[in-house]
Each structure stands twice: as structure tokens, then as C-alpha cells.
Image (cartoon, rainbow, N blue to C red; front, side):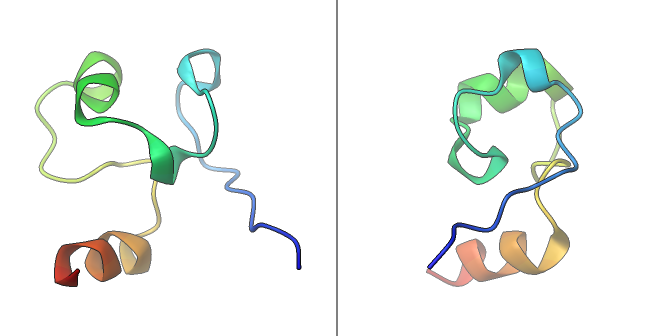
Length: 51
């Protein structure tokens, strides 16, 4: 099984893994006060909200 790589990271120099693993602090440093992480596809954001 291969881990799905995300190609939509807007700040790859700040990335330490995958965009899905970014902490809220890192998201705020990169993108400011966003309601969701813009580097993560919408379906992954929705899935995380349900958990």
C-alpha cells in the first residue's frame, strides 16, 4: 500500500510530512485564520470533521 501523496501544498518549505498531518499552529503560520486547511482536499477535510 502506498500512502497517497498530496501535490497541492502551498508552502512546501513548511511541510514536515503530509498536509493532512499539519498542526493547527502550522496551518495558522502558513495560511492565517482559515476555517479549514487549504492544502487538504475538501473530502479529507469533511472526513476529519466527522471523527
